[in-house]
Amino acid sequence: MSPIVPDGARTGQVAREVDQGRISILCSPSALAVESRARLVARYGDCPLHQAQVVVALGGDGFMLETLHQMLGGRVPVYGMNCGSVGFLMNGFGEDDLPGRLARAQAAELHPLRMQAVTMSGIIEEALALNEVSLLRQLRQAAKIRVTIDGTERLSELICDGVLIATPAGSTAYNLSAHGPIVPLSANLLPLTPISAFRPRRWRGALLPSTSEVLFEVLEPEKRPVAAVADFTEVRDVASVAVSEDRSLGVIILFDPDQGLSERIITEQFTV
Image (cartoon, rainbow, N blue to C red; front, side, top):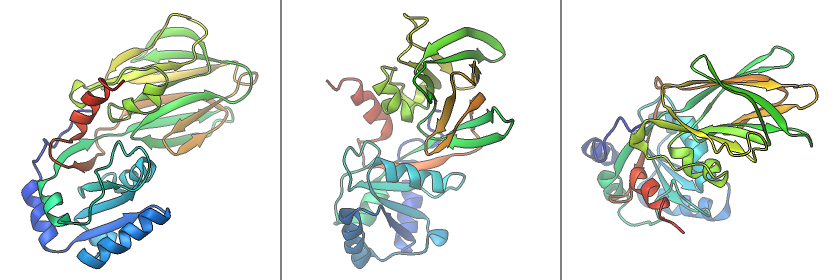
């Protein structure tokens, strides 16, 4: 999942689009974000999303993730400004010189994971994830899951609260909370991380090539039901879940100079 667009590659193009006033400003429902949007619109205007060449998203990481999903498959870059809490995917909020900030921004392109979940009743559900796809036990009993990678069975039975596979951009989110490794964008790796594994007790996960096709099969699904979650989409009572990176889709995210996503991911590894 390495960036296709190098840092700064779209700078000139973004500057021309800003000069044309084709900026769409979106915000989360929070009072701070709504108020911030009103001030920016008063200074810089706003255009309909379908006409925009640059999108500014105001809110927290959750709203930014929603906006990135909305823009998947297009070539419209998204520049986030933090009006929430953590703001790992966001730039700092500021009202001054928005066109200049957009013109100087560094770009990276992210690709999603595609989840295909088959329920116990045979229904097939598909969803995309820019953070991670996770399987989670639904009831009090631990899940039992078989893990197959590129057609080769790697774990015949993983007993756990769950298991997830993350994108590099998502490796600092739930994956990190589950003690998985942080992965640089340029590594072309996907972390596979167990959640509270009981057996094998010492298994801490794996780093997979980004081209891997991963299949999770739920063992004893009637007794130990499992839900699958791809970012915002949850599918309950799954029998199997296939996950792979979808490089046919992408979304461009913009950051202030020297604060690009690659730098943030590296910095996060030294945060104590």
